[in-house]
Image 1: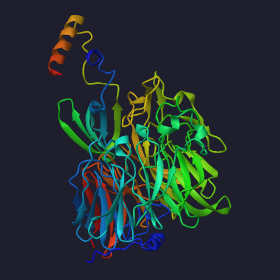
Image 2: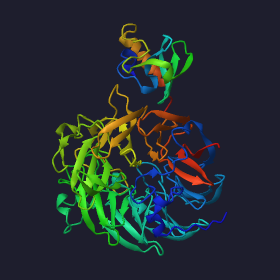
Image 3: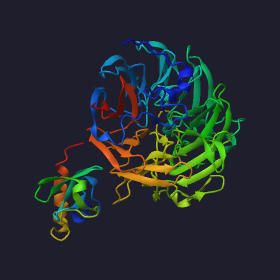
Image 4: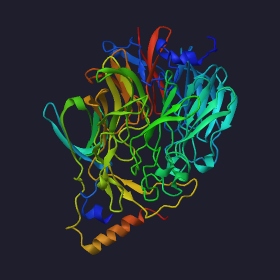
Length: 96
Length: 517
């Protein structure tokens, strides 16, 4: 959890893969991949809008596995504040 | 419609003469997995539509390859169920359900890949390691024999193979340290005719390739249906990993006959020859793939051959009368072998052995190929094979592993390679050389087989539910449909009332496609 907060690029789950697509008419979109198969890709953009493309409509699909859309908190929270945040987030997971 | 099918051995011998039916797991004894039907072809496949669907209502990987003859389709379902379907409507005629025994242990799902048919009976291997004979007309049990003890983690997932008067069946469980074998049973009575242990005991040839008592839990399972050469009277069957899968310290030696192709006398089970693809395997490279038999001219003379696209990433061509190694070629990314020597023996890469630090290995332990069937089209000269392009970091978990019956006996964890997304492809390989002629890439590593047809098409599926056809010569996409369910099966084709159908299991549904006329 600490790594995810201070270095979100370190390990991005495939469910949150950042992709950039370009359509044949030159339109470009960056977002999180929702689904992909051999023929299509669906992307949720930064304003949470859903876009669906046939791959045949695209000229580019760039995948950035080491890029997270989450900002790093490394320089915005003190170590003590980070500890507090982690403790709070863990409390949300419920008892074991 | 009269439900009075009969499938004598002589009929299976000539399966190619009735392309509208599918009489045995791989279509014929040579295991080409090919349909000679050509009503659906490149010029009209764009009109292919759903004709009927059957929903099993049973969750789990649906890995069946149907049998079809005399107006009826016979399928298996997860949890070792069997259903007979009316070919005209797709409606069920009868269903056999088997109660799941408590304590059944399987590595990879309570699956079943299909049936054998002989005379008026169907034969089913079950996850609790029984072989069951069912009356073809009613689904009632004719006999039911225990093949092995499921409490010791033996199970059966493969389709049996009917040969002459016998039913040949393989066993699974090498993730749990079983001692593997291949059995043959009298089709009428269920009495065992022979058993070939794939891990030899002391005094038997090959036992010297196991240190100490490691042979007792040696694995080498036989969980995919083989092929049969009636002229040579030989059954060809692949064997799987030695146990424990991922660490070999306590089983020093080549570990015969794990990860091998065996040629056995069909009447006696006696071993004629073996070829071991991956000696002393520590990467789980089961050679449980379908061996494809071919009589053809090769290097200037007629030969009797066997083609084998292996889980370890290499394609092999062998003489099927002697086991002589002829061709070996990597057909996918692999780094565990630095090459094959002149006998086809791999030269191991010492860095590709599971270690405590983690070893980067291609392919991962699910392999390049797996149980799903290839298809050989003699018109194009191509072997069509689905391929998994997926590596892993294999991290050893223990210095030594103690065996406990019914418990996993593996020795390493598989970790994903950071930042690397695996993928898959349908590849067309020149059967003479293993060279790739074309590939059709898919998003994730597939778990389904392929079907090539005389209509010039190759059918395949994806884990995202796409079922599609490509041109057999060029590999260009010709048709596709989204089925909504993962495809874990081999497609097949049949004819009914003058119309050709293509069938695949997707999700929990069996779907039949045809062209409206």
